[in-house]
Image (cartoon, rainbow, N blue to C red):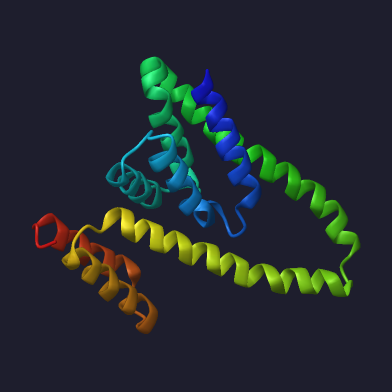
Length: 181
């Protein structure tokens, strides 16, 4: 049962810090799931992240997969499914409850100066959290100079050009498939 309690504590707390979406808390999720609890390896975490980003649906699909991996040793497939459900509920319910409560108050403070200040302050916070996520994921997925170079080239293409990101991802996938990186 301690694994399930650890999932509730981890994802319940991450839920309340996830400004900008679930990907904003990836560094902390990675630290806890890989280095502290050892539910996954770096490579497994990077793989789960990739899968969760390529499937349709919300960006927090990785939460259910991490919960599944954590629950597998506890109770096999059923333990994994229970871990996935617990992790997902723990990630969604606290944030949803907080958003609901704040929304009631936020609507009444529409013209307040501090509301505008809070909104402007959350933008750089969110950008910083997402950049930290990108750094953690590149470290988890990249293991030699070639993969770091591919990540850097793709990032420059994303930032500097209007090429469809799917084309860049497809090309990078082909490069990886043929073992060039």
